[in-house]
Image (cartoon, rainbow, N blue to C red; front, side, top):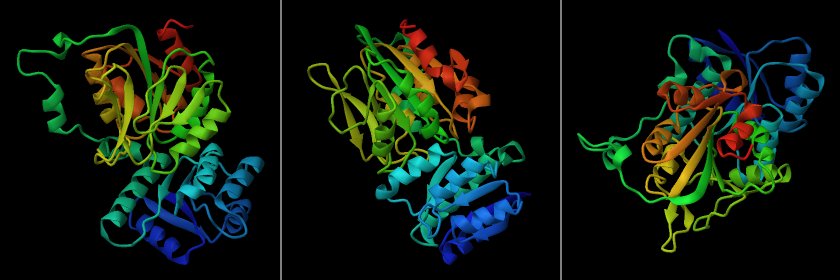
Length: 367
């Protein structure tokens, strides 16, 4: 039985979250607190929990300050999950919470009934299970929530009987290369060990699909840009890709590449529906590269739940010169996406997080 501490200034939300947790036979709410200060007192008294569910905006001590105090005094080793009425204006606080060690974040529902609440309940339990290690027991939640590629997509891009994608004819531009990185749970912090190590004069564009809702990818890009030699920005609809820039796919949109009449590639940040609940979805972005003219594509798969990116990489490997680098299990917050890529047989190198950039540069012949 995993013990949960619910920290929220709303009595209603404490009850709603507690009911969800207590209805699960492998979880129990072992404590609640109406602000970070009260939670800190419980932890200082020696109370032990397997996971902390932390709101951001609270009186006396907010969620960010609580995480800062826990880290400063090393008071608790339990992982934390942000559960907040996250709005874009609190994006900086949420990104800071992730930098301070929060595993991931979930947006509170606006109602305790309906589809939105049902989705919130499923997402909350899935992430609590994975973070506390329950995915290793009974039902494997990482596999259970893995999005499947729709048949319509496979029919559109997969070959008919007797043909193979390897024989598909497409033109390439010599020397043209693209770098791509997919990440999810644990990704915002992991990217800090990857993006800043691209050199200032890096000659190719880099596209990152990090699973985040609308309003947060701009903040993430801003933080990464400040700590990096290379320019980092949020991708914009219609924007032409330029070398030496890292583009973070826009949260709450599907990101694809479109070839303009002159042969240049630009972003389409569109409102296509989520796949497997994901928007942006790495597989959708990768599918847009099937007819691209890049001579070589270097992919990185970082920490995250599910298997997003694997089917897309498998697809483009059939028609392009693709190399794939995956983060190893020991350095992942959640070894879901890299594991799926490894098990599919599409990974060329498995390395610790701190070696991902170096290996990608090596595959490009730059190191």
